[in-house]
Length: 247
Image (tube, rainbow, N blue to C red; front, side):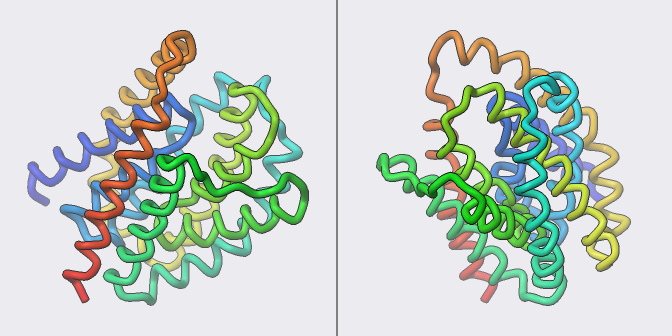
């Protein structure tokens, strides 16, 4: 495998780890689109999923006292069903359609937030089940399990620490389930393993730096999420164009 390709992947995962460590989510939403620019999307998704799972471990350990375990499991149980369906989609659907779906999700999430009309849901069990199910489908098929969960968590009146901790614990469980599903489907290949092994240091460094900057961002009231959503919108447009070019 070309060294330049491995270096690009490692750099991308450093950036994704930094974002995840700082705001509690975003590794998949940042890493999968960027990886898809120079890797096949069916390779990019399992790589980002493995790292998405790894980066949740230090966050969960550091913030374990803030985790709402009951809520995390309420979201996770329906996600298991969605993961089974999404895994089959990734295995059998043309990569171009996966790119188009991924880009559409990114544009919807980033664009709606930037125009101050974010997607909102009501709190409660029905919404939690729906968001968990959608998160499972999107996580296994497009590497984007975050948007439905973030949408649901944003409707809750809770502090940033509890939201970040609970969200990461959910991702810890859900992404581990996705990894098992993708492995059983043969999507996690030798090349995926090589890139993953070489990129672990960069991802970990990015994650720990992001966790350090979390407190700084809180103190300075920097609107990192707005910057991130603008980036997500641009990435979504690029991925849509790439999807159409592969049809």
